[in-house]
Length: 214
Image (cartoon, rainbow, N blue to C red; front, side, top):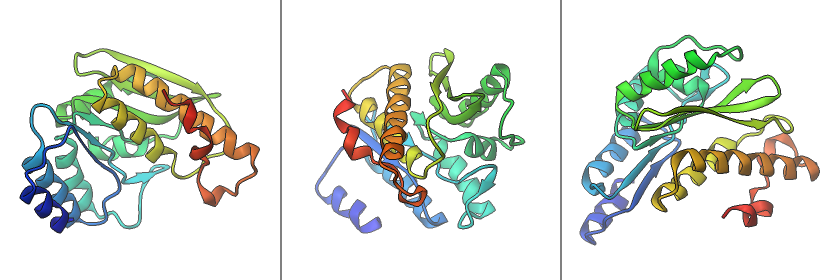
């Protein structure tokens, strides 16, 4: 990663968007933060997906120190896309799998905003028959965007969700509209995967429904 950054610097590159996902060490988190320092300007949209854990637990690779470092990286985000577990980890909030109220989710997004993130979407919130997203815009607008639950939990959906958000960010799409689009697309991906009987360990068939993204 450091070598790539050095070459970008030699070429004098600037970027309309910088997006980060899973990072495997404190050093990698530090390199990404340095990359943002070196290459982001007022025209750059920084999207941070703090891939730290799920179902109330940190991934085995994540240490307490890495979680702390991720909070510093999250502070640099123009758009932050944690799941519920990650939002709780970043804000020292007690995790619960279900039963979130709108006021609790608003408070959770506000805590993330106080860390430094501007636009926030907490994804994968279980609300009965819906999977919901809590959205806080940088102008203070808060909303819950719901999508009917489809099929079983599958890995990779968070990566697809964040990728759609990042692409829309550099194309100037309204944040709430982008979250709605990403949620619908993930639902389409899962539905297509279920239809094809793909094993749960194999992720989702996003390629088959890419034509639905506009």
